[in-house]
Image (tube, rainbow, N blue to C red; front, side):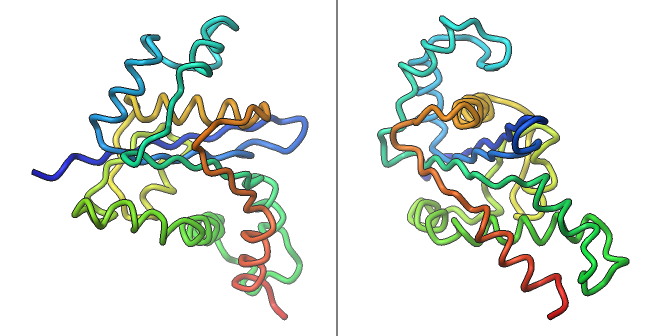
Length: 197
């Protein structure tokens, strides 16, 4: 029997420094492994902004991604800043381009950066992208749709993704989390697609 693969995604940012949607966390794993990691943290309802400092330390100390049954990424993307730089860009190939196309282009290059790794995780487990349900809130809903994956509202995988995004925004390094700074890659790739030479 193939194990059920689920995922979680979340964003974090700040208005003052780098804008909203500055970090994106994304994880996929077997349901069994995600449930076990969640159980080991031993907090019911991991919403980092609502936890006490002591509880946050408990999350940090017990967050263990050291397993071949889970893959965790955190992307530094400055999404809000990058997308805004295109929306009013004087060299935009199509100035009538709706914002949704800019969002889609961003999502395309974000997925490009992990597609091979993600396939290497899913395919041996007999899963296609379209088989996997990603738990997320409204911030990542469109991205998951653009990636042709299923989406459900929050659950344990989403709460783990919330913790990953929260720690990254605060420069707290997490073991076995693949940290990727994609700011230049995405911006340059979008420039090639969207701007006139």
